[in-house]
Image 1 (tube, rainbow, N blue to C red):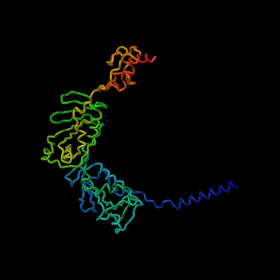
Image 2: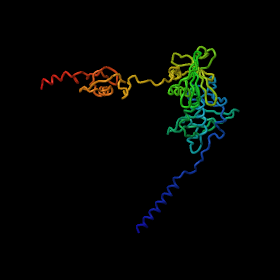
Image 3: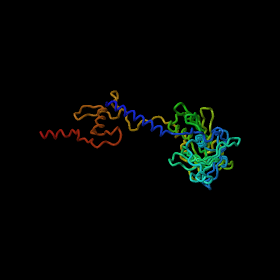
Image 4: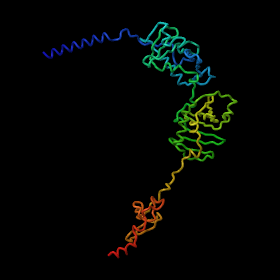
Length: 394
């Protein structure tokens, strides 16, 4: 009877759960579709960004040049390809599903996707064909989403991705490619440093480095300093950019350069980095392969300005505080000779030295073989003149 009652309750529970599922399951779910079906990252050739909410900020136009991107309205300065890639990826991830929050044009201002506040983004291909055109609005209520509106639609969408606004709300200067070098430390096989007509070479030897001076003499380089130079070169980054005007190169000591580093890579190519003078803000003028001058912080350049003496690994030096250990064959190795104990028995230098080191009671000995005589080494500790005194007491 009890089992039957339990079984009935179980059936009722399962039935109620089934009803709840049928009532609560999503209905009419729309399969997410790409917001811009014709858009592909590879086809993008021009990106025009206009932050209409900031009247003081000029529009930015990024133009693809081969595999790189340039900032059209910034004298063709190179744009950071990683920033451009992330911006284009964010467009390809835009989807339309159950995320329409408004179709009323009057609400566009509320979501900051109207023509007066939104960040307008236009992307076209090499033939000027429109691939994407939309407004980026404010961040969603969960701070993990952003309001978006296609330029030819009144629908306001709440799309996933908190980074959408930050990806496009950049001034022209914030798109600069400040990375001077683009290789890894593992790709470096050799570094040549030329200064004042002299050349110093660091050559990779498996995990170590060989140092070759201007006279072609070789020595082992300090691994930590050589590795640090390779790491610094691979991630060398500027603070700002300047146009490389020919008449300015000599003024900045870049033609000829005050110091030039040539980095040889595993693929057989080499990269030249010229270091000029330092300005009054402790920044160095640096020229690489691109037609710009980089301003680099002094602490980066200091890690590259190493002399032969600084880089050369010195041979191990003997410890000046250590002494040669006496042996049975050479009891006078410490220079102590022989001495006698309190009973007048001969002791070799080893025993005397050991006694001095452990108790400090033997006159003339010093701690670890150096320094001044220790305080407790006075003759009374073993003084023979006390024997007659003891005789009188008897």
